Image (cartoon, rainbow, N blue to C red; front, side):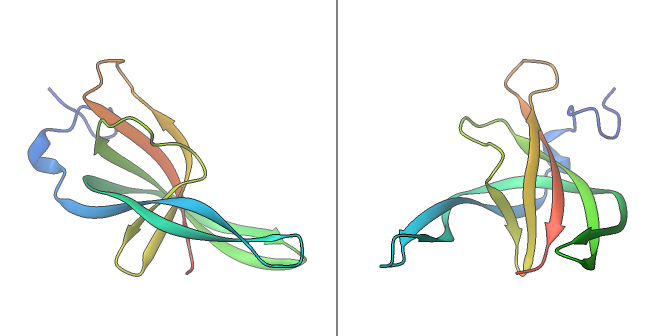
Amino acid sequence: MAGAGDGNAPIGALRLRLVLEGPVATPDGIGGATQTFETVAAVWGRVEWLGGGERWRMGRPEQVATHRITLRWRAGVDTGQRLRDGARLYDIRAVADPDGGRRRLVCLVEESSP
């Protein structure tokens, strides 16, 4: 029987339509680049809250929320990409195929502000 967070959620549990986005570097004209994101694919998934807290970034406190997102397996999902649910953004921090069966991907993510 499938348990919460084990990566074996029944297909019917993956009800949320998410957009997988990948980073694109655009030259800024002065030797650097600006990073934007473009759509890679639309995917079905399930988002589970893991926890939240505060961390310091550049001398300021920042709220952070972590989640586990389970998707149908697909090649090419990696850290540096993100998932979008409307205005909510989830930066992918880790990706795993829990049983090696290429049925599900489990992504550990941090929710970020647009």
